[in-house]
Image (cartoon, rainbow, N blue to C red):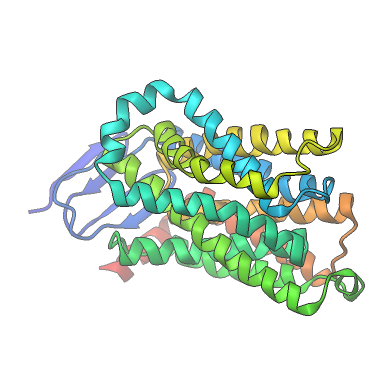
Length: 347
């Protein structure tokens, strides 16, 4: 018989049921015991943390454009590598305490670390080849799909009704956003084959982004602290990324601008951003977290327009509105009648 836990007006059914909170609702299958449900306050803080992190990440493409002499491989390796070291230093106590938990899932740790190492190389290369807005949009747009696939195939978690609705709206929005580039701007880009390669690298970035989000969530659910989980993944990735600068990082400290950009990327978006992201994952499912980060391409596009000069047609602005609607659906509780209808559809 299913057991129900009532706490602060929220409930969880332990087997073939569903759980609901003030922030999200998802159908559960095969759970063996009652789980604790996060309070509204904790869930909201997690969402806000991911939103702030996404805003900081949205500045990276524009910042990188101010140092075009630096290879995208070098700026990605430096930002993520140094950011990983800073995360390890700030979380050294949590890492020492949770080391046995992290190493109890060696394949998850390895998979997540590889994803962290590959992500910045693919992401910054995609932006260099296809432009800040397109590179960011493709990378982040594909992440929710890959995250849902990972959770469905590996974790056996079903996709929620709210996620499906918001994903469709968000996918349409980012498609319109990508299609909204003006022909004049497109004429300034590199050869078409370079843009195609940039889109492919953006998809690789989306896959690896979803991959390390999923891995971090698995480590957190195993019992590790969110900070030590992110620090563990990024620290392992730094062991590969930082040595690669010997081959690609000749221009990182060549000028004051290059040094400033490199340090900003490592400390603010990477270090602070991923601290916030790890905190948010404590109460937010990976597929939902990657959906909320759709704010990143929105910020990146606005910065690209007003600071770099990339131009968009009206359809691009319509896409931005749909992305905002997607975020609203994710962060606002569904009306009661929609919750009831989604539960009936599930049962």
